[in-house]
Image 1 (cartoon, one colour):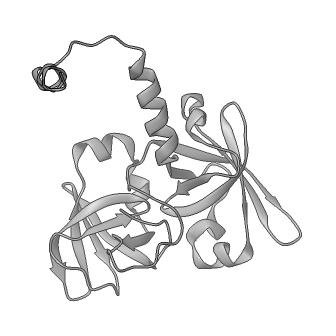
Image 2: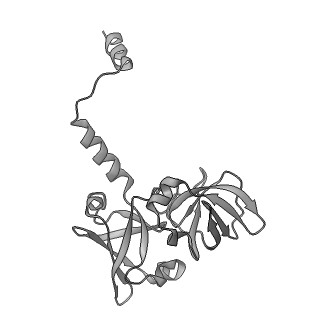
Image 3: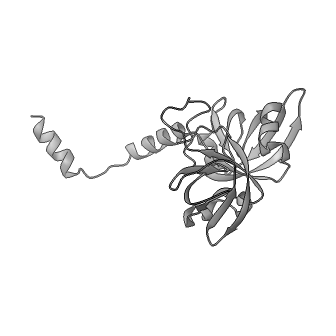
Length: 205
């Protein structure tokens, strides 16, 4: 689990044959989970100046290769004794969004992010969303897009200062919205009763 607070901007040394090599100050250990631009990956090798991670086929089918190039956000998985900041982030990318508008304001910058319309059901006004691993607050939700207002500190400390119209971003929607939608969708569907449920009913009499 992650919090969506970026701990470092690292650099991709190489990405080939499903192996992503990162140059980083973070001292990773073999088997660690680390989010790279919001994608949860596992450390498979440690170097003096960074580490290797393996990118699974499922991940590659969703996340474009450009999100594993140049500078990237990294966040090691949250530990039990860490302060809980940001929001609950799994590191599972739901879809790829695209920056459609960037508008400077007096003390912030608005970003309009377009997404496939089916995902806006999981994007809640004033709720949380993860963009390239960054925990952010949603201002408005439209039919196929949503609006973020980014303060100068966030722009300075993340790669968002370099985002322009057409920039692709990894989007992880709200965990609880997805869970609730899944439960409600499947509650209405009839299903057969398993033996464990039959036994539980019999034992209750």
